[in-house]
Length: 495
Image (tube, rainbow, N blue to C red):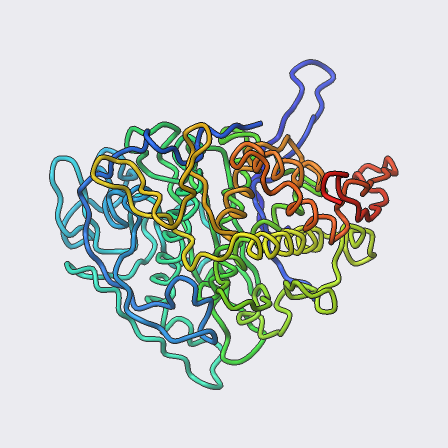
């Protein structure tokens, strides 16, 4: 792995020995017990803090994956009033990082005794910047574009045909796009239960639980290499680090920060790492199937976010890599002729790597979601309604009219599947297998809907070999290898 951030356990007693080593870093280099306490509740939502600022960003908007998928548009700051009540550019003064600018002319628009309002890509959830010199511990002095007092982040995309290094000319746009996408991801995951108590990455937790001082620090145009991206996910209370690279598969080179699928994939490592085992135990997806599924969740979430009502297949990293299948063996598809992956595919000689394991898991989740959409329909937005003045969330056409145990439950197939996957992460054990993660999703549905989707879920999982009769026969190797046997059976009540 190109980048590492280790957590090691060493025995105190003689003879001293290393018990285990866990790497908090998740690279994306290419190749061809929880509960439901953080699920949105009806009556106990925190009221939004009415201290926000306006801003505009000329970007590829949310859902437009890359420059090939659509044109840039000027988007108003669409921060979620519950997830980011201070907006995207304000930090309580007491939580501003040491050594950061605290005066007008150094990225601060205005300030008072309580808040600092920034004019750069600097806020409570995200500190976006450029990192041409590669990974260095020091990050506060790095370059960030200025939006001015009106927060207008409108920068040119100057791509020169035949040039392989002109990405520096549009670095302001690159940082802006990374800032925009990262904030949107934070707000979306927050609304599905990745809040302060669950380990959300925020500089100030606004008195809502968990540990603060851990906003995400995404860096664009990392100068230490090409064709990569990585995320470092330490426990709650420590900054997550996300680095995006330039891709040199074609001329002009392409900027990974402009491929939203790659950014979303990387940021999702923070989600799965902190939800599995709880926010104080970021090493619960250490190896084998569990580490592979961490890659798969990232792909599934990236494809889900860019999906539309009119079904399409999707590649991950297709634009950045200039390859039809992107950086995976197959594109994600409901069609077995396009993507034939099943649970048994984990035994393929090419499937030993973490990304190959993840590709199988993401494909299974993608197929399961299509069945849920067929049953419950499709929501054109993944974002729930904004909170009302009293802090409660209207059900509208987004949530089911009835709630279970006081918890709001999305009503459409894509939003419900997203909720089940995220809630399932909280329920699965340390170092989960495919079976553990599958069962956690089914248990999540039992709790949230009373199990009304039991058979839909089983039919989806079983269609890709993860049925009730699927099996794993271990070979007792040090790397937890063995035979993965497809099973296509469903429980008797679903036959």
